[in-house]
Image (cartoon, rainbow over all chains, first blue to last red; front, side, top):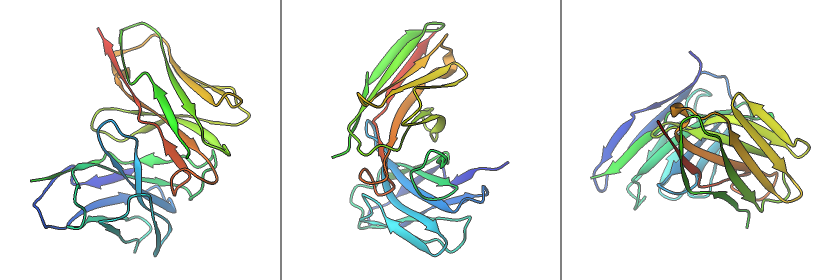
Length: 116
Length: 115
């Protein structure tokens, strides 16, 4: 099936640890995104990439890092510098970057990260 | 600052009834408006996308309307089913402003359908 696969679904992080969330898509999309969702809040953009080997900071990039070495993959690392990482993380992709109506954004199933 | 306000925050209705969710935005300039459905603990799924020139768009029992003059949109759900229980997110897209991806997300309306 075509789609976006995020793993793991649930992840626990100890204080001071870095953790990496995986995101893989087989939709042949150029653009990929990472969002953070907190209870009662709208989605906030962490990082996005419009093409392989290139990515840009979103609105809340501090404490996070990404790489885009392959078109299909866009992993997100939550570093120890992120002081409040407990949240629901959503990976997404679209045919291309941009805000046009033809550019539907498709989301993965999300990953829950909890600091213990 | 670009903003998207959704109302009500939460809504409970009986199965089979209709309901309407509201979305007001201050995003300018405007490119398009999107409605997503998000089941608890899952990723959002696109319902509709409307451009400036479109007044209404349907997807099964879901009908979205857009008034670009008043910057208001609504999502009407007809003959609700238990599976409609979810959060509904309004997203406004703009070529400039908003988030770095050009999108401004509302906080969502949490809809519960009771049998």
